Image (cartoon, rainbow, N blue to C red; front, top):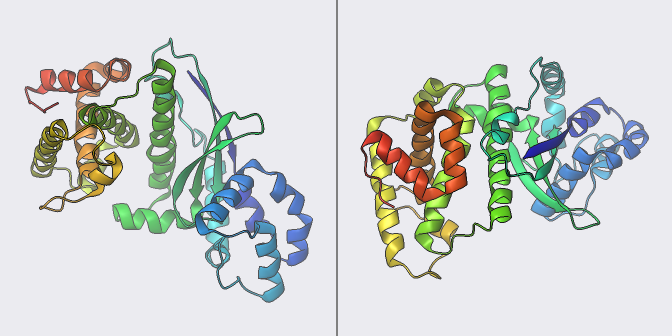
Length: 327
């Protein structure tokens, strides 16, 4: 497998450079033609149910001296932080190692998986108010491609809220590994499953598949600084033990449910009596399994798990630790 990507900072660079309605009109063609801007604009229009374009909002902003009442593109936040965002974008563009490390994702798939994936990735200072999000699109010929967006205007608030701290180094790590690699792996794994016809039907098989995929994705997010994430996420033996117990209850319950019962994601989102959700338990347990397997077997252990599936992932972990995670 090869991942090809276009990293476009136009949705950040162009709005930050525009300072008048005339400037917005002068750059209208650049805005409309930039793949990253198209991705941000389509997502914002879809998620916020608006038909307004970025060019129109920019023009109105400078004509009226402020954003529209709805401000779907978050222009108030962008321009209130123009100087800091301009400096941040310059720092990210000048990174010697770049923002992308998809070779780490490619290494987790068998050499027989020859599919080539195309990602469009955008750095933006405007648009839908989320730090990172993923969209799938089809071109005029029906070919599917994926878009990954990082909203730099949301970066510092997001890291401070989720990890309790902020630095440029942490942000770079979160973009490169925590978002691009994490989401890139999940998208690639979906393509791999489609290529080999892996489509688990039983609820317990779907659970095990999700445990492995999400666990490996979180491993890619955290493995460059595991001690930091252990501390900030409060991953300790007690917490992990609680999630392992919850996983065992989930898998036991899944064997008792009929094939058509429940929508899996809705089921996993429901908290139990202790307030734990299945989704969080899958993430914590899957991550600990992936890092344990990688510590002993490296990429080969994770690649073999991807190739052979969730049952192998569970068995490999249990054999390494003596634990008896249920499947």
